[in-house]
Image (cartoon, rainbow, N blue to C red; front, side):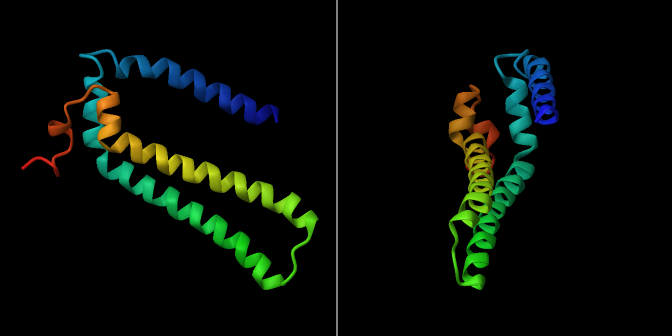
Length: 121
């Protein structure tokens, strides 16, 4: 548990150090440029998160279908971890969807027409 908390603390410190430079110029213009440049990567990560969440639930369900019995200990031991994994992956997918969409662009103060070239004709 200490190792996980150290990783979390390190990532929080790194995020707080580097997020200031992203918002430094012109009220988030750096973030707007990043959203446009990494649009394909965000799409791939979002798809992988949703597919990963589906595979977690599928593996859990297939294990119970294959065995034919569901025990209370199995639900407690294996079920909670699978449910947490599914929730985390699904949450990452939802957050990436919000960031990539017009909601994220408006949240960062970006001009939607300049970021999303697919909607601009």
